[in-house]
Image (cartoon, rainbow, N blue to C red; front, side):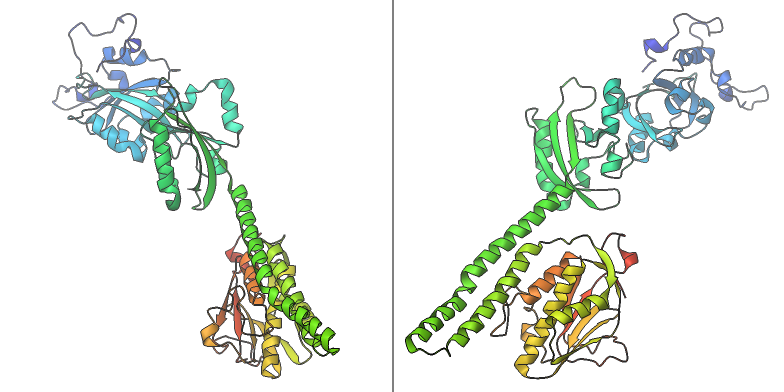
Length: 516
């Protein structure tokens, strides 16, 4: 390759070498004593210097001479305009050290003696610390006046192809604009990539965006992505999860559109926006609809039996003139009232929590016991903790745990002690009642599961919903023997529930936690 006509001087200079005469750089010229003489670019052959100087300092390209091993032998005067560094800063350096690590192999191949392609698009480090995209054209033949190959590097940053009046829309817009080439690799991404995904602008240029797509969505997105590349008429809209710089996942909605064949910027334009909040609302709505469907099915099925009992009791009382059967009807009414209350709680509470606040665990526990405890039972608060969460819903969870303990203790006709304390494992709610049959432990949180004739089977389901809505977990232990309870607390041997939650320093400031 030879220098482009625009890179040549319009007229020969007086100091140019005569036609046909070649001069080596001074560092390669022998001195009178047989050694070699070190030199700067000022001693490069005048003809070569004239050609390099023809590239104006304000240009978007520069000329360099590079040895096969990558050493920069000459740097043209336009280096500062393109890279922001003085030309002398490149001399003697390995050019590949200034090339982006992901682009070094193709640049090295283009400089080699056996290269088949000597035009390569790659990134060069700028003085600002970032990288600029250039297209480098490497001469096929060695240039004797340099002792290496002449390389012409021209800036091809895609954002320079956008009209200046449109650039502010890209810089200040909240949507992410991405341009990919025919190979499916990113050629441009708008500055909003930092706000939306946390990546530095330009850091994913040259890579395939498919590598950042969630594995569960990748096959679907890949198929539609390449269909859009191959079919100019295709304009799919996709929703998928995309990895952020922090390693988290956000939901993106992307609309693709093919660019004209003669477009200088790329092949496919992708407009993306973060729809994570919308997807979360959709998930909550779906959960609520599923809960309402479950509620409707339960009401239509489970309420029929007690209603039949009430109806039969009323008829019996009318026929016999005896009010004793009405007692069965009253018990059935009480069961319906409890069942409806708990089902409505499940239907209305949703999967999220209200604005969390900080409060003392002991206060909520005692409030719940005042509502759901029993005069024949004793509450022991063995250890307090500071909690950040939804106070109202956590009180509801404790009420259901207490009610569950009291009901089973009444069946066993035994005195009851309920212990609430904090341990290294979490918050413990245990009692000294009859406990839970090992065969039933895996089912106690299932909706509708109960071993009590008067139970609804939804009390512990509500507890699980409340705990999980905080991002915590609840489990059932065989007993409390392995728990590190305070010395003054009697160790119960009945049912033992443990709520596990993170410490304040393990989650974001706004997330629920328990500091025990």
